[in-house]
Image (cartoon, rainbow, N blue to C red):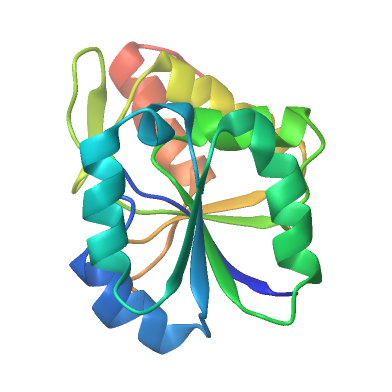
Length: 168
């Protein structure tokens, strides 16, 4: 497989991505997918600068499945990153196959989201996306940097459920 990391990260490409993850996993370039990202001219410039000498492709959600397929078939190694689990759910619904693991990094506080961990806040739409992906056999784990302990979706879901007053 030539997509070596599949990650949700609200900052997309930043210091941790460049200094930590790129040292742990082989990478020649980034595939970034997200309608919000592609429509933000300033953000695209920032991501291009952050990617440094690595190849960078930024794509709309609808282009994602085709670009992911090309990335998977390539001899190059890519990180596939979006700023939202909802994008990954949409990609899977549209036939994308990026493997069976999803790493979740920072998803910081925003309106309507509950803080369920360090730099991790999710809302109902994120929850539904994670549930959908989990139901499709994708192993979801939460880990900011490679040498931190992983938390499973089951653990994060239990905390969210308890905060929302949902019982098992």
